[in-house]
Length: 322
Image 1: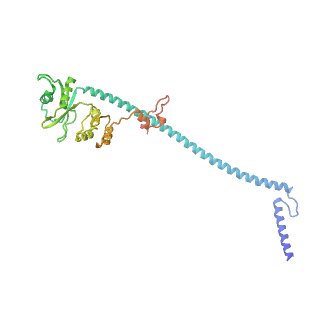
Image 2: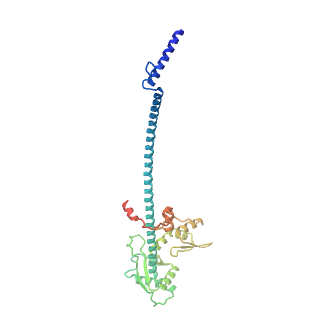
Image 3: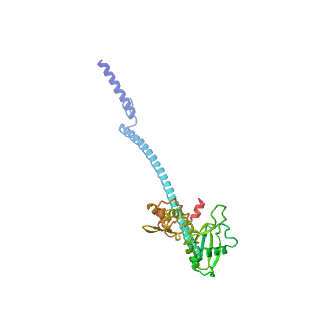
């Protein structure tokens, strides 16, 4: 038994020696094939280290290439972002410039409306006269109407001339049957005569063909549009028998607590609702009152700030190109 175990161990030792000899270059007789075994071991170690170093270098180079690709992609994205930001800022600046130009045009329109109102300074408008009620001569019809209905209130002599310069229907298409008739525009030579007639007409109920007619100032078109916005408020105030006046684009409401003056229709509707006078829906004006401050608030801060010298971008060209 012992002899068999000793034989097995000897075989294992011999096999291990052969494997070691094959690694360090020894022959079966124990001699070195190519020199010093220590040098051979060192060369093997160097080969292993070189192989590992090559693998590490290859891995590092691959990772470096991946990082480089990612950095290039990030740089491209940054360039695209900067380009997009610059284009957006250019667009916003162009929008602001265009809106300011429109605002200047609106200011010019206000001046034109003021001139239009001054040119109508001596005019009155008469509402509710049926079509064709004037006959063949509108000036003669208006003169007879005033002398018949208002002459006592005017404190004029029978032979005094009213100074009617012109009288005609409003320059709009003739309405179809069943629709309200066009108003009548009457121009006087003297402003004082126009004021006397207007104030006298406000004091009396005037009927033409058993229909009531109303006298009022001849306002400019823009003022008329703004005055129409007060229609629901005026209707509600009449229903509640509350006195009011509407000079130009304002409304003066005479409440028990005193007279309240409203400059805008939404302001009047909100305050009257709080006071228990519920107003119907309000139709806003087509031209909202936008100011330069409103434009500055709506646009980004970088665009709202004062720009440095240089030619501003051509917004219209940008819109055409897009």
